[in-house]
Length: 72
Image (cartoon, rainbow, N blue to C red; front, side, top):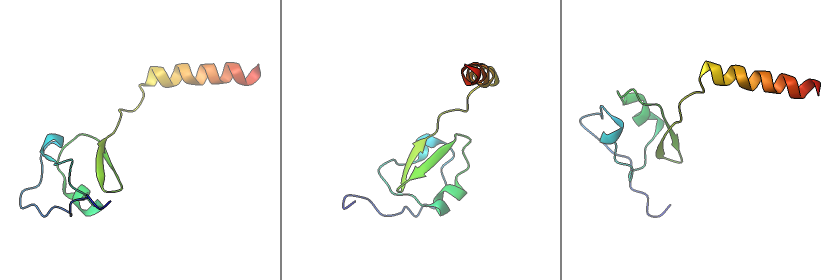
């Protein structure tokens, strides 16, 4: 990680995911100050948008298929 940029020291905290510079390295302390609603995760200092949770109908179909395969 020789090309990693240092932690940002921002006066103004980002209000949207687009306000975050993806080339910088972030910490959990940075994450706690962010005010935007998008779900993100930090892996080795880099920020990644998270996939949305599966819908309830998707979970019900998945459970039904699992149950059917379990008794097979």
